[in-house]
Image 1 (cartoon, protein in one colour):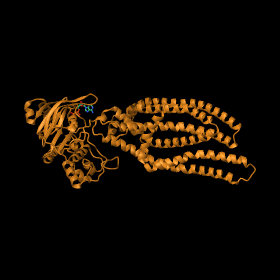
Image 2 (cartoon, rainbow, N blue to C red; image 1 turned 45 degrees about the vertical axis):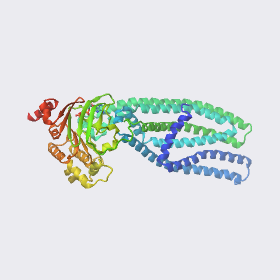
Image 3 (tube, rainbow, N blue to C red; image 1 turned 90 degrees about the horizontal axis):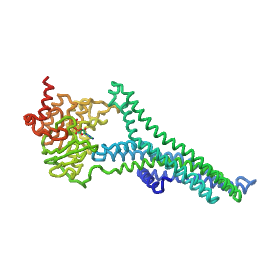
Image 4 (cartoon, helix red, strand yellow; image 1 turned 180 degrees about the horizontal axis):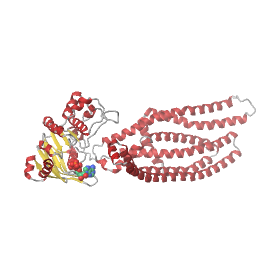
Length: 592
Ligand SMILES: Nc1ncnc2c1ncn2[C@@H]1O[C@H](COP(=O)(O)OP(=O)(O)OP(=O)(O)O)[C@@H](O)[C@H]1O
């Protein structure tokens, strides 16, 4: 059998650990009930044998003799127990399943969101594995519990019956087991095939989900309707579906065919065992033994067949938990540098020959060197794709430079405690988050460890230009139409994102295109408030609107990942280089 004893344990142990950690008491209770349930079929066979033997000796006598009564009562109790156990096993399986499913989701959330950098998102395999684990999280835990429970009961019952039979005719159980082995081997092998088809089909499944998402999501709803995108994405969905479906269907078809062929082989073995067993009993066994033998052929065969089928399904769930384990054990992508130095502020941040290539090989920065002093307001400008956002991502340590280093007061950023470093920084990103939470929560998220003080929230909203929003909606307004709340315009969302950045008490403020969705009046107001609030704070501003970079003490101009100019607005204009050219182009737009 492809599944050796060691590998079975290697698969079973992590799954069992998750079950017991999710719900220790209920899992232990469930195990107890399953043991009881597994003993019932054995008890029924044993009691039937005793009953028939007693019947044979008391034929013609009273039906109420104690020797007849006790196996009868025993049988009634065994059947009653079987019925009684079922609802409680189902109850416990349901209950453990809910906790186990929540545990799987929580582990995935902690692993993904707990990874400090963004490198894993660059790896398509990471997305594929996450997709399979997420998609199957709602049902694999339940499958595990149900099929593990079934298999456990079936193993116990089969062992008990085999043991009973062993006393009668030792070759009999051996033959029956032999009959089951090829079937079991094939089932496990094919089940693995189905799982691999699921796993290797993950990129397709991810594309399918994406095509469906485009048609279902409110973000794309306008273009879908205007451009009539339903047939296009429906066709793309079906193309991927058909290829994925074919490979899964082939795997499942092989499974059904293989099982059918082996069932015939098993039937032959069983017939042989039955014939030999009967012959031996007729030659000198009791009537009870004969009944036991006949009954157990059906029961054991059914049992072993169910065991193989349930075992196959269980195997798939175990493979799911194995994948979960390996996903959780993914090594950290960012080089660990020990506990890290705690910092509470900085005097100077220095980029020294910093270069960066994304994991796909795309070079985004090369040989960038500059220093930023505390309290300075620095603007980064350059064409699309020049590397401005990448530079900020390195500063926030979402990635480490592939060349050169970033020094904070002479200490390499990699040696600084990441949490302490990030606590010094607040930011508004180009693709800021829009959370389906209240207005107050949306703002206070940047400092989630403290209970939001309404005055502090109001002050942040004022600085972010969302004071009017606060007056109109109130702090408890839910910002999500999908959940029955209010929907904001893009510019209003940007004001909320700005307020969130200002709510955090930080020393360095990073603003990546903070005014892209703001009206000109608000943009002008915002920069005035910057001057008011940024006092003492270090600011890095990325923007294409050159009018607003005049507020900066210094401007860095990036071109194709290289720092090509550096200076104040006036200095750069005098230099008549790249910045002056950008300025001239923008000014022209207003002049004509
Ligand atoms: N995750 C990524 N993987 C691979 N390449 C990337 C990734 N993110 C950005 N790039 C590439 O790196 C280069 C720099 O991108 P970056 O976002 O830093 O530019 P930018 O100057 O901020 O541009 P924009 O003004 O358009 O925001 C671009 O060519 C971009 O295509």
